[in-house]
Length: 59
Image (cartoon, rainbow, N blue to C red; front, side):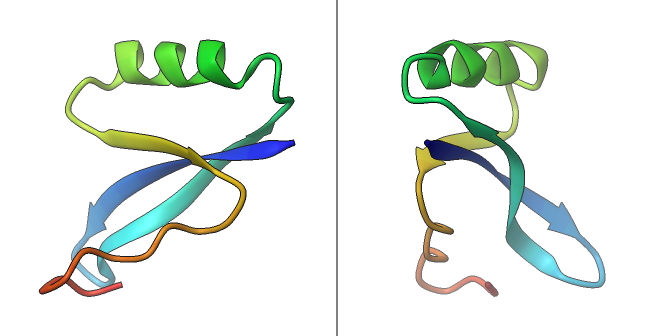
């Protein structure tokens, strides 16, 4: 199992990682492609743990 994360922006939180769904290893790439197709301006990553925030941003 892995997790699909999105990097989102909210006024109250700033930039943050949001868990979108848990995926089986054999379907994770297909889920990633579908989410990227639906929201091309959002950064999506596959990771078993919450990704770290880039330097200079809020978590």
